[in-house]
Length: 175
Image 1 (spheres, helix red, strand yellow):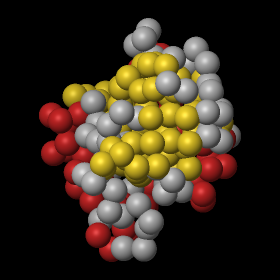
Image 2 (cartoon, helix red, strand yellow):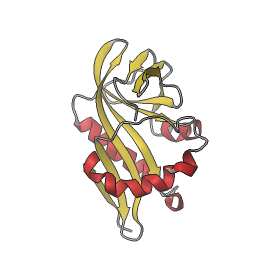
Image 3 (cartoon, helix red, strand yellow):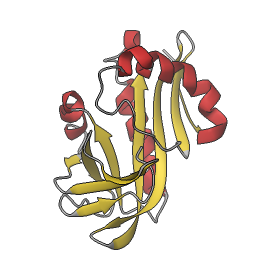
Image 4 (cartoon, one colour):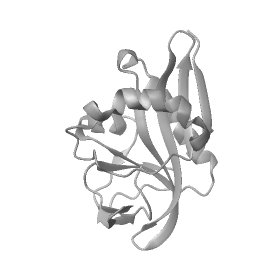
């Protein structure tokens, strides 16, 4: 089986990613989620995994941002919008896409750590891939202003360091 992994501009590749994203995170799937009304940032880059047989099977958004951690500015990378076609799960696609995203973030020498947000049922998946729970507070922007972001659990990945305590302000929308 041949697998193609592309890392593309976030805005330009949204038309390609949107049908998969809507299939996985459409209105019916979001109806009972505590984060259903969150306004999310647009990805700077996207990892797209395609197979000749199935087309697009997996997506991971990559984000770059200067945030504050304990009041100090730090450049971070992030992943979000992780989704795999339901009929193609448990084949390693998400792991490959996340690995490609981490590799891309590491190539940006300014990135000190990476951060993601996930639901409890996905925590073990990320922890098995060296993501650590962030036990501090996270703040972000929403249309109504700055809020404490606690509808999904934050996890960090060690690029230069991986802070697990303190306060992170995303200085913008979450991803």
